[in-house]
Amino acid sequence: MLLHARPLLGIAALAALAACSPDNAPTAITSPGTTLNSQGIGQQMRFAHAKVCPSAAPAEARCHSLVRVDNVGTPMATSGPTGYNPADLIAAYNLGSGGVGQTIAIVDAFDDARAESDLAVYRSQFGLPPCTTANGCFRKVDQNGGTSYPRGDMGWAEEISLDLDMASAICPSCNILLVEARTNSFANLAAAVDRAAALGATVISNSYGGSEYSGEVNDESHFNHPGVAVTVSSGDNGYGVEFPAASQYVTAVGGTSLRRSTDARGWSETIWSGAGSGCSVYISKPTWQTDAGCARRTVADVSAIADPNTGVSVYDTYRLHPGGWLVFGGTSVSAPIIAGVYALAGNASAINYGSFSYSNLSSLFDVTAGSNGSCGSSYLCTGTAGYDGPTGNGTPNGTGAF
Image (cartoon, rainbow, N blue to C red; front, side, top):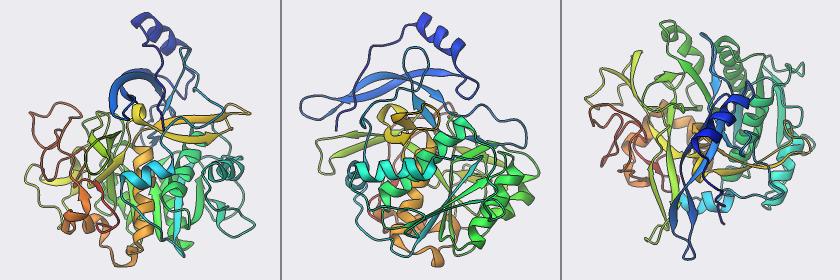
């Protein structure tokens, strides 16, 4: 698998790109990425990428995905996949088969009318079994459990494609339930989470977040579903905490940069600079979290690939019909990956929220290098042996920590 490099963008080009970006991709960013040399070893490169969803208003959430763009700010669609594929992710995280009988719920806002057909292309491309309404594997509902789907939205449709593809990549034998919230308000997204649990999801993936607020102490009850593993992305703005990742009832998922390596694992990971982390302002510290740097909830718990420069392949046609293959990053990648690992493990009914990984450290790859911001060089934003904020306890090494 080769991640293709493209020329560096100059400052003037970046300024023009940002000025012409659509509302749902307001900022183009160039940051270190990776390509592979002739020996398959990661080398630093640079790519431009843009936010898929706009910044969120108070009481609303933004999807946590970033898409690779061209020099005019358009998502860089190709005729074939160029990012990491399911086989890469399975190899990087030492995963196997499983998940039969498990249902991964994907909770997102707005409607993607092409969700099922785009998913079919992704799964066919990589030899994954069909997951359709007809064979009972795929189901799409609104937040009330019906078929009165909300209006469509370009950014959130891309987010939906990303989430469905990542859940499929990690757990191709799992059933998938897509629950579409009426809007991106916390109230509607929370209702969709409750609906997913009521419809029998064993794992619920949430790839969104927004600024913390005092009312989240009450609103986090919507993520309190004992026996259901609930994953939430930690954010894409670097050091700082968002809700619902701050909830004590979820597994907060940080992000890494994933590259091929010559070591025994064959892969290396460092902290992705965009991953959210830190101390919640409002949420009490869970009993299973014992780090000394936060009096309240610390984010994150675990992590997986999130850097858009070492991004994953996703198939989407909503925005760029006939569309094509795109490369995505953000903690919107890592949250459904970890959801898929929970489903492979099949232990959700015995899990006490995000606590399981804290007692199974030998089944995680410890990420010790990198930073996501400035916090006095403490573990809250800087990689270190053992627990750190941006990557939590580490990334999956099989399913033993889940």
